[in-house]
Amino acid sequence: MTDYKRPVIVPWDFSELAGYALQHAENIAKIIGSDIILVHIVKKDTEIQEVTEKMNVIAADAEKKYGIKPKVAVKEGSIFTAITELIEETDASFAVMGTHGMKGMQKFTGSWALKVIIGSKAPFIVVQAPPDKKNIFDNVVFPVDFKFEEKEKLRWADLISKLSKTKFHLVYQSVSDSGIRKKIHANAIFAQKHLSDKGIDFEVVKLEGKNSLADETLKFAEEQNAGLVLIATTKNIRLQDYVLGADEQKIIANKERIPVMCINPREDLTKTGGLT
Image (cartoon, rainbow, N blue to C red; front, top):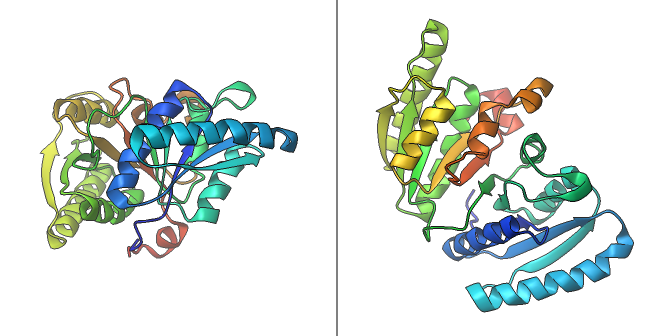
């Protein structure tokens, strides 16, 4: 977490949404001083040369438009493994993608996107529109849930605060179940102490609406003109969550088109109960 110059990965399928992701990645790369790698997945190795030539044209055009020339990677395989393999190979800092970033036989929408995201060690920043601000890290909504995974979001809040003068909005809901309510309260207190000890700017907001935490978080984020919503994915997510739609999926595919940063809990921290 000390080297912020690790590359930013952008899954690329020549779509408009992939173009939006590249625009966001260019902004992020300028903030953290990193390279960008455009990655496209093909089914056969015989396609690699032709696609690489097309990707090189995209990279050259991006340099003219944004000032940073992305590197290009064309890999044979499945999006469910090839993208995460590249993230590990390059020790990427972030991946930035459009919500519907892959089409065709390996469709990259809805629950499929969530499956790729939860396989990555690096956070995915999911976008649905071109950037409307230069720095999405300036104003971040941080929903507080009852899950243990919430604590790991604080490691990334530390990093974000070093990249930008970030204002965090810790938002939570009151619930009727006393056990869950205690866990939410404990996570909120833990987060407040952590951010306060680090000297990070934040506020705590109780969401008064009657809808789900996901819906109320997105409503609040839109009201605050937030640049980013910070969430943690759930470990060992159930198959029915992919079919029915987990809260994470609702936030990722939000109709407000607010960028969402998805963090996957580290297994070593989950086992030890610690933070680094």
